[in-house]
Length: 179
Image (tube, rainbow, N blue to C red):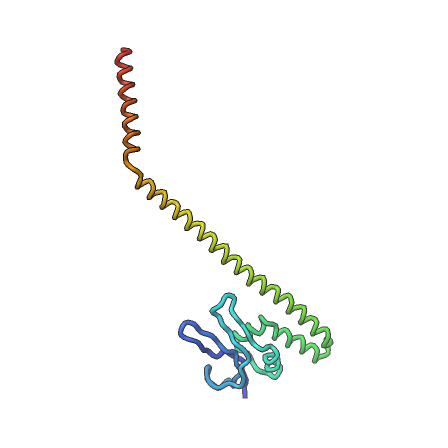
């Protein structure tokens, strides 16, 4: 019996969520499975990957073959790296203590990297929102100024035109008198 670790779809239309399951390769995608080991939600940013890494590791060591998508998830969470280290222990290349320490160090670095990405996404989103708010404020102020100018009485511009006309008449009379 060929065993696969794969995704089983659930969720509504255009809002898919997936279960990470261990199943016989001959069973249908959303059909019968041996064990559910986690969930995957691609709709969040970054995508939510929650699974029991111990169960996944056990199944990988027993020979279960992950699909390409699940292989990427297992690699992202370090299950395949842990398998690599464990094969080194089995062959006698390294001791179990060294393998465990290497895995712990890798896991800490990976978790820090994930947290940095998550926080940078949050700050970038907040900064974008602030920029949009500032742009909206400028547009709103420009509109308010345009409305204010439109609603001011027309007498003020007429008075200015009258003053310029009076000044032109005075200049003309001065030139006639001087001639």
